Length: 242
Image (tube, rainbow, N blue to C red; front, side, top):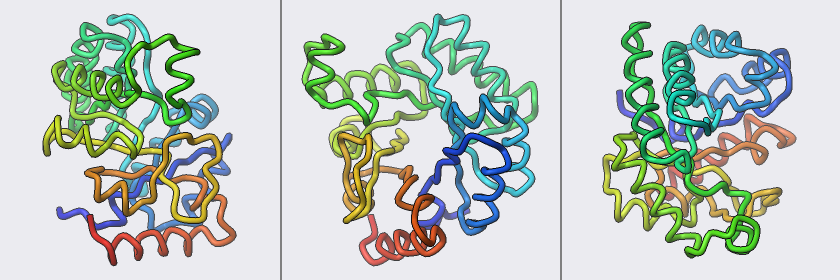
């Protein structure tokens, strides 16, 4: 099935309860791809994933696993049984853990009869900037270089793709090539507040730079008319295709 522009926009269910999540789903039936993060998954558990599957939605399970190889492997094996489409793990777990996680995701999908989820490595969180990387985390590399290093580590480990800020996506696309998925959070339409995002671009700029999927939350979900906000972003991207 050919993806439309709307299919490439992932909207986060960044709400604390299942009831609030369902209200948002009802408000935005035209959204085909939803992200479930830590807050909602800890609150609602896998029931919210069942709800999304029953509505025939695609699921980005963004739990950002980060642990020793055996633990992340077990988590990815279990997550793959839910039939999610995208799943995240921190690249800083290291190559051994990334390989174990990928193998376990394949096993979990096979055990449950689901398609293998696309395992994505988190590179550098979009809430961090170059100063935080250097002074808080003591990483000696420049931020774009460090993000590229982590994306290549994920690719070498057999992962399907990476999560990166829009500001790094052009370099990652050029180096990692077309088959490597790149998902960009922190995307902000012109005129939107950046909030806690430090490295942003507009949807058009991110798509043109090579992003496969954009995660756009508050500019849609916190808008006075979320359905209109989603429609306007889609229209902007159709007028200026990636």
